[in-house]
Length: 230
Image (cartoon, rainbow, N blue to C red):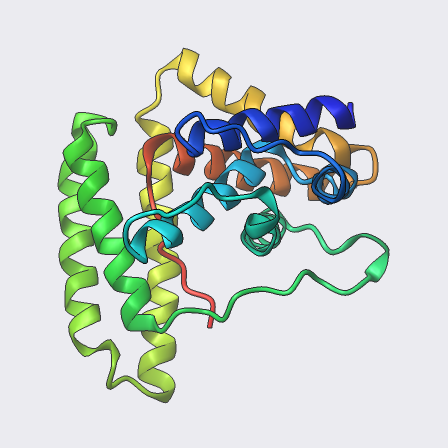
């Protein structure tokens, strides 16, 4: 099982490196094995690798292939976000993975608007979602324009509103899936949760499953997380 997990990571890393093979062996194998042992879903690990590559590309032309070791912080960061989204706590009450500092509210809103605009232009959303996306993007742009000067209760109100917008966006996105897509999404979410299901109470699992479905939908449609955690 762990060997299969490591091969999947190696294959994905190879694709991200434009076909250049970087072997997951030795210390790298031990690192990736630890992700499997912690229960990091492959899709979550892939998202962390993607985040690492996105940052690398922003620095300018690539000079050398990226090793999996360089992706560790991003993978654990995304895993931490995923666990928080589906309601998991660190196993055994241990320390949580070190996370990157949270972006400013202004930067967060800039990224959200950019991702929403890209998702709308890609055509992956149901046609009926366009008015909602336009309305949300407009509201977020207004919030971004004044977010830098918000303090106290006003800032808290904006952050609360972002959570409401996020919930509305996900209801619209999930409602636009056809039956086959819905089954595929649920099957993938169930696979991500499989390592944890036996230890969860039914009501906790139901909440976690709903959050996991949302995450799969976000990844498939390229939707951002509008909710902001300071």
